[in-house]
Image (cartoon, rainbow, N blue to C red; front, top):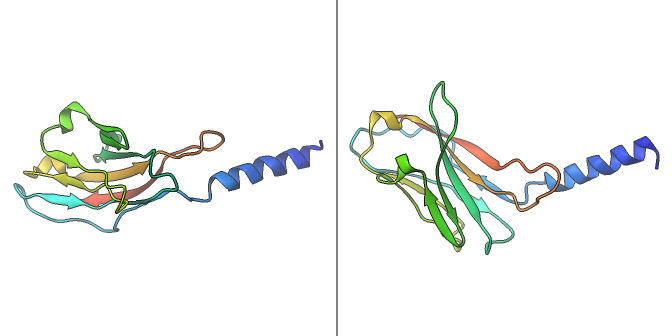
Length: 137
């Protein structure tokens, strides 16, 4: 097989897996509220296989790195230790949503919040599909 043909096959495989069949959708823009209030950050998803879902929320502070907050799965859930008390999410496979509720808002909650869906393809390019959500308090 010539080098051009193998490159074409690799390109075709990458394009096939990156079509975006599974995705998350978050409303654009900032959320502005006050300390002590409760907010819900929306996250809709589109996935072919709703029986085997893995959805995650991450918090990304200025000059920091994304921190895992919580995961919601078809078979259970997990919260990082620092996000157990005031942070809640419910995976609803029927409405294809996993909204994040933050109670008793604090100034330290100001950050970007990412909703991510684990890809179903396990070969080739498998970066999580995600979209930025900004929360300003």
